[in-house]
Amino acid sequence: MANVLVVGPHPDDQEIGMGGTIALLASQGHDVLLLDMTDGEPTPHGDPKTRAAEAARAAEILSTGAARPVRRRLLGLKNRFVEHTIEARHRVAGVIRAHQATVIFCPYPEDAHPDHRAVTRIVEDARFDAKLTKIQMPGDEGRPPIYPAWLFYYYASHLRWVADPSFIMDITPFAERKIDAITAYHTQFVLPEKNRKVVDWIRASGVYFGSRIGVGAGEPFFTKEPIGLHALSGVVNLA
Image (cartoon, rainbow, N blue to C red; front, side, top):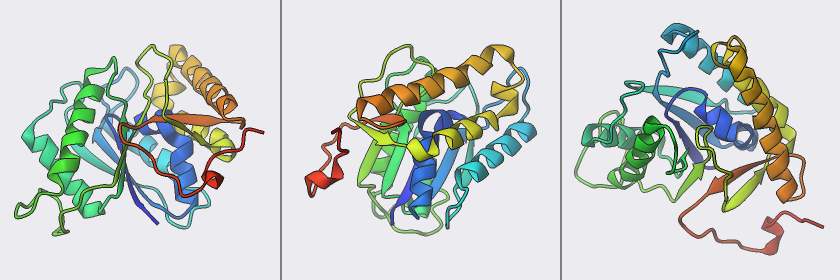
C-alpha cells in the first residue's frame, strides 16, 4: 500500500478536485493524508472553527467503509497571502518525510487563483527538498529523506478551461460520496446561494470525464512524467 499525500491550498480544494479518488484510494487501503496549506478563511459565511469542523466531516465522509481513515493536517499558511518561500518549501518537505509519502497530488500548475499557483510551486520544490541528506526539515519527526516516486496534478475549480488530462480515474462507486464531502462545507456550498450551482457542475464534470473512458463518473489528472504499465489489463476497457 502507498502513503499518499493530497495537498490543497484551502480546505475543500481536494474534495472538489479529486474527492472520488481520495475515497477510492482509502477504500483500497492506502494511507491518505490531506494537507491543507491554509485554513481557507475568511469567507463570507465561514470562520476558522467552523471551516475546520467542516473539513473534518468531509474527511470522515471520504473514509466511509475504509479500514484506514483519511487523515487531515493543517500547515497554517495565511489564506490569500501564500508565497513560494524556502520556509514554506521546507515545512511541506517535513510533512512529506513524516508521512513517508510515495505519491503526491497537488493542483494543476495553471490556475486563476494565486494561492493555488504558489502552493503547486511549493509542493514541486518540497518534493525535491524532502530527499536532501544531512538537513533536517521542520516537522519531519526524525523520518529519513525520501523522494516521492509520483507527483500528479488534479484540477481545481477556478480556471475557466476544460482540462486536457493525462489520465482519468474511474470514481463511479464514489461519485455521490464526493458530492457529500463537498456539501459538508456548508458555509461554502450550501449557505451561499450562488455557490450551490458549483456542486451541480462538479457532478456534471464527473459524468463528462467518466464518459471519456466509458464509465459512470471520472476525475481527470495530469502528469509531467510518463506512467508505466505492466500489462494492458491496467487500462479501462472501452468496449
